[in-house]
Image (cartoon, rainbow, N blue to C red; front, side):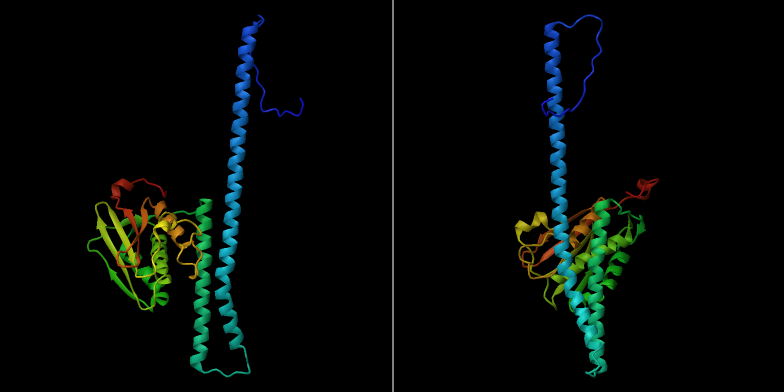
Length: 291
């Protein structure tokens, strides 16, 4: 067949009469058009696969670069502290020993957060993120996040303003706590020590809203559409460590709850990161599944 590729076989049932030349011409043209359509569909599929492979390769490269850079710093701190503690030639006082142990603990927790974010990203990418939905109190969610972030935020002025009479929400409390924790971590990372970080909740129509406001470096308007993309780092934050996963994970969790998440620049400096979740009545969830 002169190297031509077979894309399909057409069979047409006809009666005993012979086809006229005109009918054969029409039939040949129809088969040719069908062949062209099949070839185009095949090329489109191959182009999509090639694009997916390129995206996967970009993701692997970004993941490798991010992880190798982010894990190296806490790992180096842990190793240095351990080597120092094991140095028998130097006698350390209890205060110095405690400082070295705190260094190891802080670096370990940082590694734990990085690995946790990577695992959360993998679960969302594979569709394995399952919500454990139940009625929960947003105040408990915020309190849990504040407890978990206490060591990380101890050098900042954290101001909490909880709206009164917030309704219960049907959600995964543990995952929402993770969202608030990541937003607090983001605010701390890009703010000067000692500055104020505000955590506020509000009720607006049929939504509950959580806002984290800081006085940090903010971001550029051009960064706004990409802030919640995986591995994206704002243009003015190159010198601040990070994997670019925290906000992407927040978006994935909020989207899974059919909520919305956004960021704003504060007119007098700093940024606001907020998310809103729908307030759903019990009868509207009757017989519902985890979605």
